Image 1 (tube, rainbow, N blue to C red):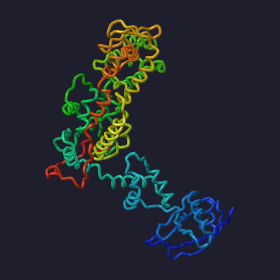
Image 2: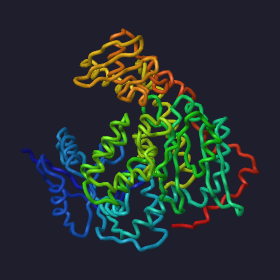
Image 3: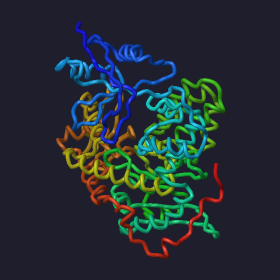
Image 4: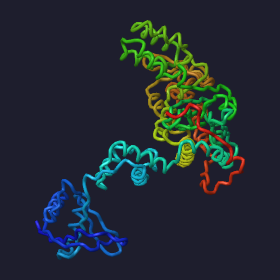
Length: 526
């Protein structure tokens, strides 16, 4: 263990060039393995600094071309000691010591909270960052020796958000200009702004042209979900989404409050279905109601209920409903009153396939969770950039994929293929086969793409029994899969790019658009 002599420069002032001027000189000797806390203690003792009232800040200068380096922790001490090892002379790499009051308090004034707010602006540049008033209190005390009250820290946060995002009310007035540029950037998009008679905001509806084009290559099942925003005004954001050929989310529309607007944008399609968590057709919401209304057998009921909803055949469905009735007859009556077609796969009037049991809307809500405090224009822009980023990432990914089906459905097909190897097949006719699975027998009709297990026709993907029949015929699976699952459809979904919008400083907006008045919603602030 070596002893290191160190010069101390204290009671000086930093100039604009990062140099300490008019300082006093002192010296200490420390072990080369000293910790940060021990170093502070030795310095405080030598310079007679009361660390219960003062904060010691340590810096040193490596060379005249670098700004001063600050020592804040053990690693900082270790780096300094390694540097000092090269030249152990007392005068080499002196430590510059400055001291501040520990318990300094800010008076509660707009000027001070604004100053603190300006210091923490970088913390809020990413909406996903969680930086609370308590975090502000801690950082201001540890880094600047400033002891803030919680209210001061909260006001500083509000000031920082105001500096960064402006006033919420002002954001509504920017809507006409933003939507004008949006339509110019993406021709063919559907953008609608609805106001009350006295120019108060009612709703805004945005569908980017890329989504309109991509929608034609996805199954016509739309999942709509809503969430309350945490901005100053009582606003709800709705999103409409579907599932692409890779089994991932394709956002179709956002900030939607009128279902008729969606149909105008996308038009009607055969077997089109809109699933919303605002009705009783969502599995999770029905189960939440069952748990609240009926108090017994939740563990068994949960497993049975979801298995019943996912049943592929009426026989499976009826068998499981009988077991539910044995546990609690009231649950069966409740599910009957809702209507089996709203929650059961086998009773559904439109084939929702994988979308019925997926949580794509909730997945999007997780992604947008941290944007709910943004002003309205910033929120719309976040959704646009999200679509831009996802489109580029998914197109890049699919171009590097060489399977016939998208990822999710290719994996499902592989799982079915593995199960099919243990099955025996007996041909009955050209396209009709009997498939034996242990003691069970299944009838597969390849011509009609059906199997008595129900999975082939409902999933629109060859089930294990169909794959066993195809293997016996030495026939490929491709023509028996839904085109909505194919790589070709996935490429077409994202073939139109979402290009970046120009910076606001370069917008060229007609005067009558910039002068259009949009006031905040009538509901008032929270």
